Length: 339
Ligand code: WQD
Image (cartoon, rainbow, N blue to C red; front, side, top):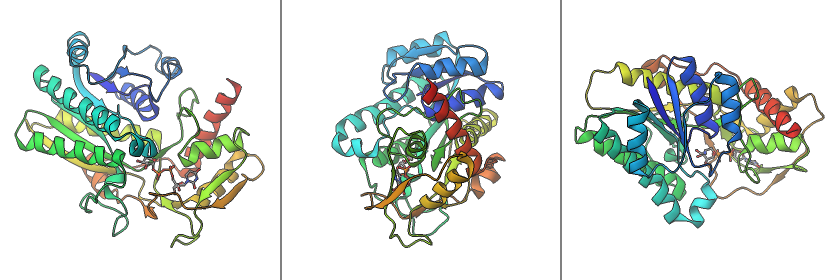
């Protein structure tokens, strides 16, 4: 079955393209390179042994989507394409609402028109804000979004829920990610740093590579065991494989209308300092230079998944450790340094 991977040149999209191929699906990619680069397609080609069909375009172009569905015989979609920079979303809300909501609405309309029912939606644990209880389950209350980016994810989930409530012939699963890190073990694809990384692990690897002078830990006075924030860091290949498991469930489901939501995390929480120490243990270099600085506005203290539902529902669980993810991220960084 041919699967359209929107944003498939991006970090999670490209790794999911690999997992799709490994499971016997054929990825077809649409991406406008706003948060990715053509080099990801070169790396994918080396891993897959063929270059996936690729369309450089936005996802809100209905005419193009119709063309792709017909030409590539699309049987399902994994929708990653969205703007995702929390800070930028606060400065440019209309850009985020137009792109993140508009793309999903256009995609849903074309899927209904072409009678393609299977959709996996890329959502985020940011919908939970600061959970009242940890680990966080899918029944935990969705809190008012802390950012425009997070709000677009919440609104998209509501669009999906209402679309299925109206009994449209679609089968949809929303996957709420935690913190994807790492890279494919081949180091041929990984998290491409466009500009100064806002995420922790790319900043760690760039500091270790000498691109950044020092890491600033955003806050050392949180109510956690070592004073730094806690997150659920999941290897990007584990996350990619969760998408394939979710798609396989949709393909098998006989219901004409179906909607499900899963948290996709390891179920473990690690603090910023624990990530730094784990990196030092695998980097083979001197200790990472870091300073404890001011808290970053918008950060929640701790969030990590209760992954029981996704394990029960999909038979999936994270297999790779934090250390393995950091090792793969570091190997990827070292190939970038040579580039
Ligand atoms: C993790 C921890 C920082 C950088 C965001 C989005 C989320 C998803 C993943 C899109 C925090 C600390 C970070 C640094 C630091 N993105 N940190 N120094 O904020 O949990 O999640 O990215 O889907 O939606 O919100 O990830 O990697 O930015 O931060 O101390 O230089 O590392 O304060 O505690 P976050 P992150």
